[in-house]
Amino acid sequence: MEKIVTDQAPPPAGPYSQAVVAGGLAFLAGQGPFDADGHRVGETFAEQVRITFQNLETVAQAAGSTLHRAVRLGVYLRSLDDFAEFNAIAGEYLSEPFPARTTIEVALRGFDIEIDAVVES
Image (cartoon, rainbow, N blue to C red; front, side, top):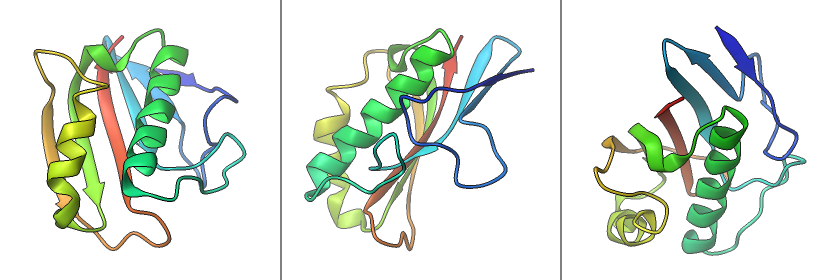
C-alpha cells in the first residue's frame, strides 16, 4: 500500500490518509466543502458540491489519477431534497461510464455534503 498526501486538499481530521493506493486502485477518503487549511467554505449547496468534487480531484491527481477514472462514489447528503441538484452538478465532474454510486442521507454537522471515491490508479 502507498499512502497519498497532498497539501492542496484538506488535511485528515483524524487517523486516516487522504488516499491509499493498493491493487491498482486509489481509495480516496471522504472530502467535504473545506479549503486546504481545513476551513469550511461554500455558502450554497451547489458551491459546496463543487468544492467537494475539486478536493476529490486534487487527491485523485496526487494519486496519479482523476475522477474521470472513478469506479465508485459514496455520496453523503444532509438532505435527500438536494439529490436532483447534486446529480446535475456531478455530471460536470464525472464521465461515462459513470461510477457505481451509493447516496445516503446523513446528519452532517455544519456542511451539506461529503463524497468518497475509488478510482483506477
